[in-house]
Picture 1: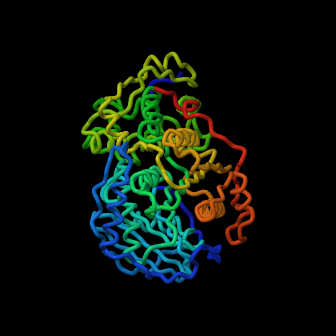
Picture 2: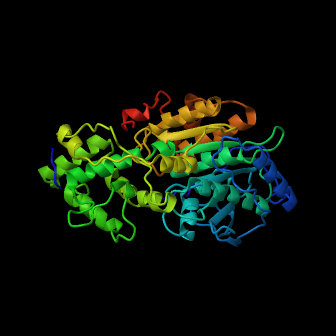
Picture 3: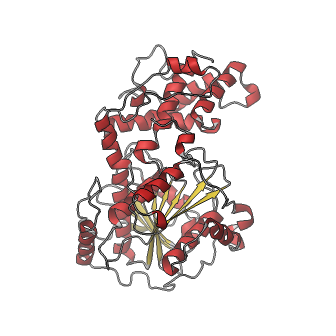
Length: 484
């Protein structure tokens, strides 16, 4: 074998449609807003009902008051919507939206990433624009940009719940609330449903259903192992991250604190070694051989090599130093790497690491899911997702089974090849199917979701946007990522 050498994009979606009738259409926005005392009382009930198995118990939320100021709605949001933006008491930027003729359903959105560094107002606005389909389909929207950057799932779940409460303080109690999580935000949304959604019998749960799209749903324990594999395999093949002249460091650290490497420089190193940013015919034979070795061993498409390696650099740095005090949560002892031109040589040279059990437990306590979700959950995942492997859905199904929630889970898959955004039609069909499940008790099937998609209004472009594959079932994650 050769040896020795996600900001998520989105486009404009501006169609405005007549929303499907829902329970409570025509409710007066702002009517029935809860009192501060009522919110505090409900929050206390939620806290008392949290499962004893939870590894993190949020403090009882303080009474919340309306925050933010009216703002012009960003491009793509349904015309004549009312938009409010601001920064909450914890430091998270947020946007709230009520479309015209609102029917009473609120979508609480948890965005992906994660972003690193200090919170930025732009991120919360960009997510509202990317997911403007919700306002155009007639749903209100509440989205948080999170109070801190980095791989902090529970913190982000608390921020998403706070956005829901901010919406109530401003506009009143919705008839229905659907928690939506995208990408890494799917784990955030699921965590919020676990932490805040289990309430005493007779009490109103904060969420009526959960929609998870393109989800990173393997938890901290299983979602990141392949990126350690990528780091160690890449270094054997390319030997330039770090360069021979740079100080060596354990690759599970991502990057030593204070290192000045930037994303453009990393991409340049990857391209020099593999030619990944060049057309195939422009690569040298050696570059192509190195690229083939890496992608075949780690089972990632070449188009996502640079982004995965960046995540295995700066996200790993955040996990190691900001979350775990310099400890290691990832290991690859005993893993046999296969698929290169010379597997024996690769396995003889690859770096081996042993995870610190305490660090792994601490990371799992924040980022793993327990599957104890008390409301209907529907997932949508592209079969050829280049970022969040579709096999993660197998892990999530097992998690829900272990948590006693398998009967409340429906998983759907699409013949798409993207991660950040699939199609308006697919999302609207999934949301309407989930709402029907919640309100009428009619549990959808992959076939019924596909049928609903095909019957959507032309403004959602169902002929072009419906690519559900009801016959698909994902393989176990171990078929793609070696277990350890």
